[in-house]
Image (tube, rainbow, N blue to C red; front, side, top):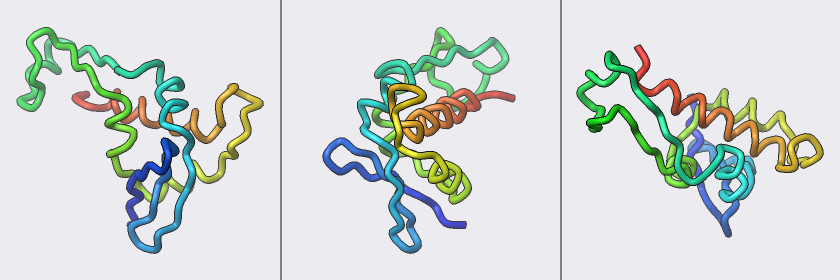
Length: 116
């Protein structure tokens, strides 16, 4: 399965196929941060989830740098294909539709971290 890695060009994020270099424009990193809700995304873990050995937090709160995750987390071919189906119009959200969908998927991925 082809992986798509993020690449930034002048603050615009693209997902780039590792196989053939196909590029899908996602939108500006600033717009992604806005769509997620800010520079930092906070996940709170319950007592059971806090027992995970990889979770390095005393208070059960993990703060994630949205810019870092958006610009480094690779994606599957399926995710890239689904995002490509959305256009870059701003009529629906005031931000490009594809950018908002990318942000939604990013949040879903973050929320699944540490769940049982």
